[in-house]
Image (cartoon, rainbow, N blue to C red; front, side):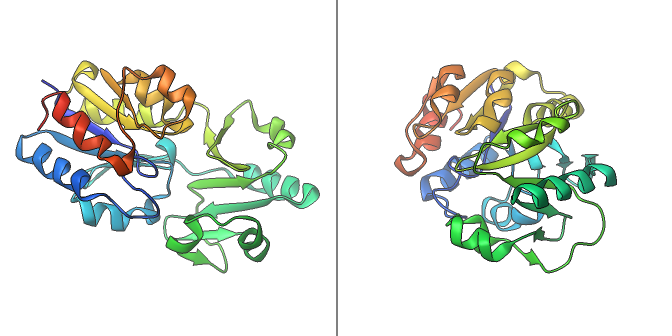
Length: 251
């Protein structure tokens, strides 16, 4: 019997922004009633998932692709970028005309918000707390590089670019991922990986789909993720999560 179910947010739990299908919420409710742990694993910054946590009633999460891991009231892992890396990113973006965003756990600072709004009609700009100035540690970095981010090669020794569409990349520590965060939580609560189901749709879900005992790709998932998954369910808007939970006897 599976004991832990992991959900990505965008394109998996949500249709757009923070809109979650009623059948998905019903599935989560039934999972909890059946004593199954639920966990959110997202590329979003932790300050951008509060509404999702409130709607779903899930209080365990992995944010920023594994840079922030929380189980109940305990912060299991937290990463902050060193100042020299931040300065290098600022210089590259200034020289190449890129836009970047730095997140500090309370909101997001975007280097050129007006240009970004013209070029990107992404829902993230409607649902996040935009900061005019950045203070404190930086927990998450998004790079907006329409040419593929080739000028960030100097960072490859310690970081990797994870694409999530249309010239947008997360800059993730090379030894961190959603899967690493899942393993940390699973180890803490004594759940073996063959008792874990992961749901995802994007390239930053690859590691957790491969790690889980059962990796489920949404019907709207990237082709590469579908290839890696054990099972492909319907799309998020066509009750994909509910149907998969029903098929595998979780609800």
